Image 1: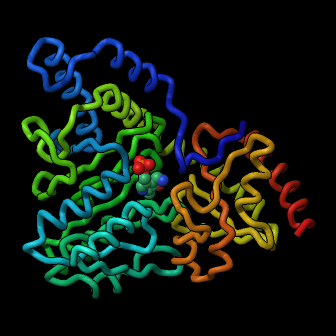
Image 2: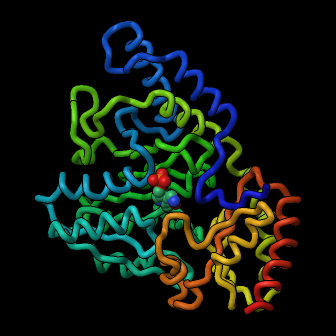
Image 3: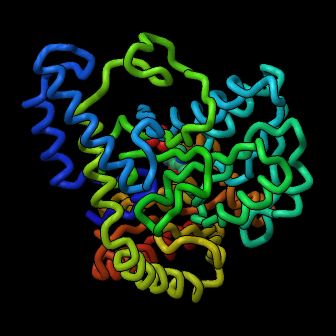
Length: 375
Ligand code: PMP
């Protein structure tokens, strides 16, 4: 198998899996129980959370576990809107976000909040002048992903923060860091709120987190017993928490070394595609090496995905999460519907080998030629 869909999800690391199994078997107590088993579970939970907090140099109470990035994005956006609605009713998002951001924005509009979409430049970077002009006294939140999931454009959160805070000190900055964690060194202190997801970093599915600076008010979106956890009530999934903590520690090891390895694979693939004039490479100079996005001519990307699948090779169309065929991000960057209708995403990992790339390119060429001839 040649798996090149790491931006959709990743296989679970063996050590992470081992810790998940160990905790499931050996720590049966509910962290909220007052007896010995509960206390032992709570201690493990606190240790795992402290390890995450230390990785990002934040406080333990600034980490809120969620079921994944979708919930964390939802919580960050509606949670800050509800908690801060007396200050204003306006939020700003980019045109490069995940559906879990857009769908929440649509919902907020039905509740009376106003949503603005900040423009991006041709290279995918946020247009800072537009951002500046959109911020008002009413702006509660700006949400901009650290790395776009389709084209991999990496934003400068530090510069975005500077622009925002200069216009309105009270406006909060949230960033969906789902595609950024483990791929380069991020500074979480550039933002007030950040989303992460375990299954994108070789951890189990079903857990993510929202980092929330302790000074920021967020209203809960799930309601239950607030005795132990005010913002996200419910029984703590201890094995998932411990496994996620481990996955994060592994993901934040050798980040630069892995990145330079993946960059070499990326260059080989992009050079190869660039030689074919029927293929448009959608990456910009600001795309991270882990994500490659191309548009095909006269061949549906879905057909290509299935053709490669016959060879046990896995890539994706624009994104695994989008229901429409059109890539919203390619559209936002290139403003070309045809180009945005036929996108293929190839996403790499430090687990990808040079041989995988060679074989993938060979099969890709053969299948692409066949499909072009049919069309
Ligand atoms: N944000 C981004 C940028 C993503 O790539 C994804 C997953 N495709 C999500 C959010 C949703 O993540 P989850 O599956 O953890 O809910």
